Image 1 (cartoon, one colour):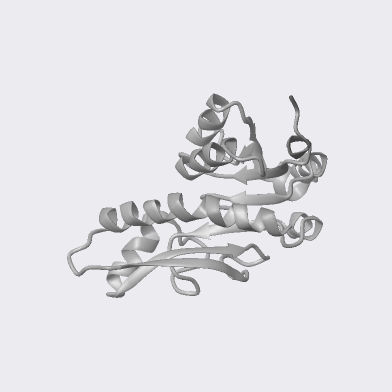
Image 2 (cartoon, rainbow, N blue to C red):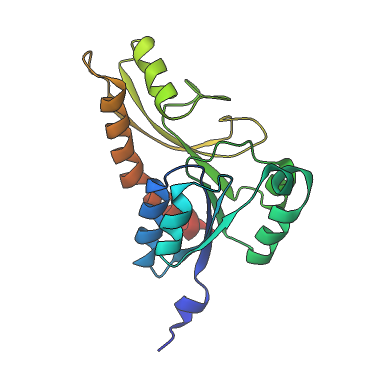
Length: 197
């Protein structure tokens, strides 16, 4: 029997460039929720594992190139058709075009594997961030979930969670702990944002 909640389920779209473990975690989290669902996953890499993960979980998986994203309105028009309540960047490495941000104000969020404003900006992603944290002898690091604006990693911060950095930590140690923070908190923050919309 279809409940009224089912019809008003909030729509989440995820953009990702890599293997998609965060994306898979978010899809599975919301498959157990009446609040919303991931309805599409977009990737700018044809070979990205995230597309297969989405497909295997019965979520529409879409590849696009820079021309469709930046030069034309192809990606924007697909997003308009979907009309998502939230666009989630989970390891997506391209700067988001203003035309999409303008059409979906305060609806595009990103996760960054450090405590912004430290260790952000173009080219700062994944292990590069963790290596910089170690090089600077930081005592703590963590994750930042923030709104996306026209500059890399400079949008308003929504949520942060921290872990201590021990002196003996290698990049792999930090990466593993950061992933655990991401898996724990990212779906919960998305849920809170959807509840407030």
